[in-house]
Image 1 (tube, rainbow, N blue to C red):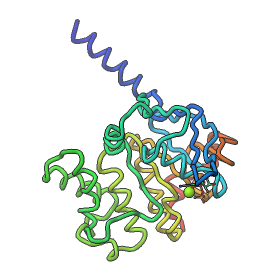
Image 2 (image 1 turned 120 degrees about the horizontal axis):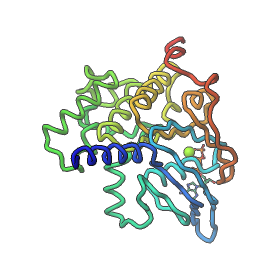
Image 3 (image 1 turned 120 degrees about the vertical axis):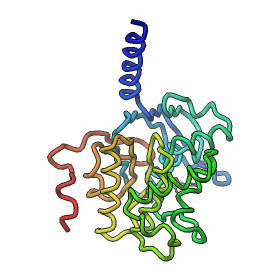
Length: 259
Ligand SMILES: Nc1ncnc2c1ncn2[C@@H]1O[C@H](COP(=O)(O)OP(=O)(O)OP(=O)(O)O)[C@@H](O)[C@H]1O
Ligand SMILES: [Mg+2]
């Protein structure tokens, strides 16, 4: 009986975890100080993102999208308000703890890929795993699996300059997902890519989403947003709209690869 009760409790726990918000921000603010001038980039942002959701953050240039993503990715600290990541108040953490949270929970994909040019694709993907204290063989295995999952198993010994832009970004996605993060954050991940390579990268995000990943994509591009479930629009550092993409407008697997 005790075993059955424990199993029920564990299942309830899993349901609770599944339903929980991975990201919750409350009155989040970020003011940059430029000399004597204060630049209020975020002026009180509220939203929650449940586990497994795929969200687009949109808005005009300067509206605060990258500032917000950097806060969500624990690359920066808020000036005010609260950020709960997987239920934990990030604001209460020391810098070292924050670095640990970032490494363990966040996968970041950058517009300009941010790969180290002197390292091979495999070494680039392995790098964040070094800070996890994994054995070398374990790191290699995870990095190889991540590269294979983005279709680059045969390019693992190439350096970034020996890869196309689309392939470099796929390495960037592999690096983000190799550590099995709670959340994947991407800032204009298709911004430097031609439309075919951009679609390939979006396809990877969709596959990850279908496998249960929580994904937040900053984009200027309405087309990109149609691959997501929900769009949060920012303007002048506040949320001006937040709602679902109607399912009839959403891009699915079927439409992709059509071009
Ligand atoms: N390091 C910084 N120091 C001072 N001001 C900054 C800094 N970074 C951003 N800002 C200002 O904060 C505001 C929001 O910038 P942010 O980069 O978040 O915009 P964005 O929505 O990502 O724009 P874009 O679409 O052009 O990338 C802008 O007014 C910007 O000038
Ligand atoms: Mg930006």
